[in-house]
Length: 615
Image (cartoon, rainbow, N blue to C red):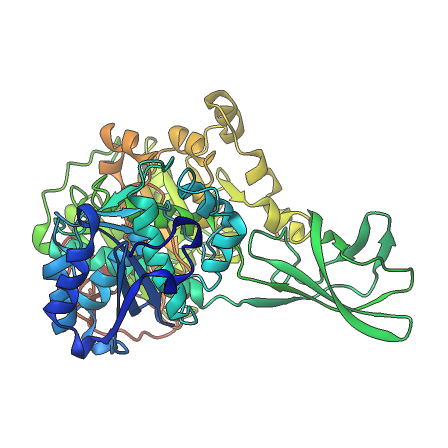
């Protein structure tokens, strides 16, 4: 019996539900579900565990639902499927004749590939790719618009309140799967689903892309759900709410996004109580908060807390969208890019395009800089145009002069080659500032440093007083070529954080100062698997003009740092990292070192250069 349309959440109205453990899954269970599917259409709904591995997968037709519970995934078995996963893959997931709908199909396809090595063909996603954890009610309503007037925004929000997480109830995951096939197959639906397919991707490409995807989700889940916003004691009560001042940049009050809420613990009239509030304005350290209750003069704020994870960064949004594009067949991550081939797939390395320099490159630097033998060899590798030096890795403990090597290498390139450009990037603003200070010390004055308004305004202006004339704030980035020329004034050396590279207006800067040599400082603060995702829509034009083929890459790695929970998403298709990568579940060096000794005395660094990694 088909459930009545308005009461889609009344499962007792005819939906036959079968629940099995993966060890007990039989072909008959799947066949009974497929026999009940109208026009071979089914819905899929997952429940994910803490590590973003599948805990439950529900398959539903219009009259039946099959709930399969998976065992906890052991990391040692990542990419290895069991009998249940192979059965699902062979009978349903990889069968192109079965039309499969899900609300977030890209996440489902990648997690199946990463944890179980399972491929999925032609799965239609009702929602577009999203890096955030929350299912936005308006997006849910939009993807089922036209199907039924009873599918309200509030009803859908309640259905996905656990965001497909481990606390999702069995009833809700069944309803999600049922609704996915019901809305997906409805001819009245207004939205157009997105087709994802992993069945045709090369094994190694799918393995790396799915790893990128799942690692990025795991890193996102490690971000705190609650942040205590440290504020100064001076609080002003006005007609528009409370005016407060953040005490620390790291815990500052920001404009709340969807899924976030502000909690105030206040003391007033001899009593303490908690109320909700919203941020109406943020300017530097200052923020105006509108509480849900009226507060009087003399109120004391005990604490301010932001509940809900911070919204995804531009890098996270871009990475998520581009990874989803791989499943759509829009592009591949690793083909036709010698830099990525060198790091991930050296056996597939194609010949490097030739590089030409206007003049012979020589090591040049200020009299105020002294290079020892190992530092000099590192600089020679950075400025070299030989194929074996296209990807360069330099590492050393603190105090070995890595920043000095950056300055000397940059000075040598800029002084030797009038057509060369150098981009110096790092994960942190402080690291970029340190590079700028070293450039000044080496008497290289013609550079531009790009800093976000949020970081510098009202917080860190004092850090940039030495090179104020070199400073460009992100809110003043040029929006046209004429303004870009006036702002850059012929500078061929650009400093920036990785996150600032994703500002759309950076494309105007890159058009004037194309990326030919890229140096990344504090490279060990970046998860390198995520650096492989380095392609942007804007970079395609540069690739065609040959600029991407001109890029040389260098990295500076501090061996005391551990891999951190941040990532680079894109600069151009030339932006990749040569550092350690994981292959076949083992940590392996991406390069062979010039010297086998990894530990150096103070003042010495171990350098490495390669055109082909030694696995």
